[in-house]
Length: 358
Image (tube, rainbow, N blue to C red; front, side, top):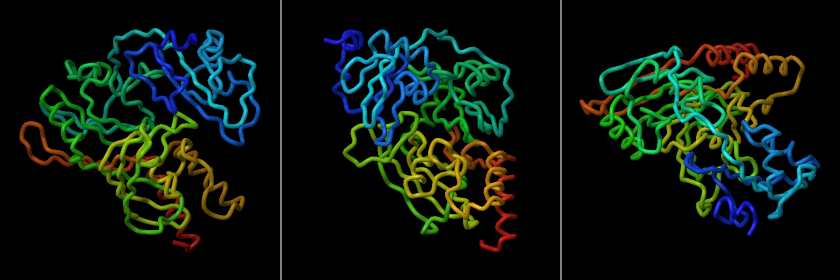
């Protein structure tokens, strides 16, 4: 039995895909398959580039301890990764303070009563503490401004949260202030009765003005930092449904309204990429380069200026609707586009009007 098997108690080398285990486990487990066109590169450098928040020295320590395998065999740090190599990594989780500390971070509160809070989260703020982000999060701010927020068992680092949005996505979140509200709101998310609308700026023009993307989403087998679309028989993937509608088209890019039936990780981002329309400026899903339009110097400079204005995916959680936990009345909230998104939208509007291509 290998050292990895002794530590973990499981034969991870025989698994097809490994999700990251929960925070109660001692190890983080990853599996990466190198691309067909992968150039020869040292495995410690390769993994440090592919695993978010993990340093090269930490990778080297794991290799030295025999916790990294290539094609089922323990490897060395100077091994050169080859095309389609399967790399399995078991990283000991670093020690950390279990206590999440309150931080005096300003919050934009759209609504508050005895049961819940509606927060308008800015782009760049992580919602809850996790590996690599133990401070500066929305939860750290909530703990400063509100005491005794509820949490579910085993989820102590996410008090009051019943959903989340990505770090670089802006917009609305609902936070529960007591156990009753947490349970009632969570049930609505579980039943997919929450109304959620996002605005997304994407590359190109969808073929149909309205459409539904119905597929299965799971962690990518080649890069665990992103998600991918799978067939129904993929055991790690979950059903995901996104409805979209074109609000305005600018030829090169289009503004879409997206409504979620489900709430999978990166759902809108991976769904829109799967139909050939990645989010504008989304580096994880290929939207941070020119995908539409002639590559003239003037046009390239224009797009680069847009990227500088909004160096994050063009996605905004615009509205949120649900039944109030106590009154059972319908609640509905809307958030205007943030300044960076609005500025980029106006630049495209002006550019297209001058070109007369809309």
